[in-house]
Image 1 (cartoon, rainbow, N blue to C red):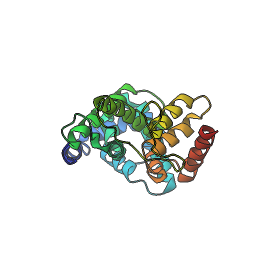
Image 2: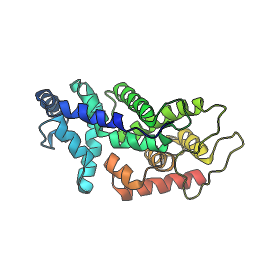
Image 3: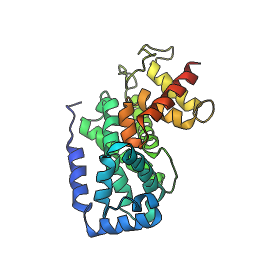
Length: 246
């Protein structure tokens, strides 16, 4: 594995810059706004302005709006062919965080961190398109979790017979010690969350704990990406941990 190559990120930015302020982008925004009040209320004129606002929310109100807008974009993705591309650009910082938590594919068959990130983006695109029409209140967290899980399975498969690399960030109450089956506490946490979500564990609480404990994202990062206040997300994380420990 060579040093992390960020050129794919630069290319994504350049490609987006070429279309995000175009007349077609303005038309796409108008079609989306006609379907979604949360988008219409923003008063932006094209998808470039929309994504810029999502990437740089100011204050709790704008963070709340950002979460609802990404939810609306996925729900009304069929409004225009540019919509999946706009969603991808909006969640790009989160995809970079996922790639970082997976050590840019270190130990896998990718030739560089850039090559790994291409697969991260491709996987995100597949998930975005597959979820068209879905109504997901925590769309950003769900999307990043889905991408992380798919890439992590591929990475671990490629690492078969090789030394394992512990991924992510441990919670305060966990240590990176091996379990009987050779996995780490982090692996066990991910499996436990998946098994309990929707049953003993509220799905929202599960998504927050997964984002923080498994993806290794801070509560502030999750707040910026989801549009939910840090205080609320902290409560979700605390409830989820309490139920899992119990």
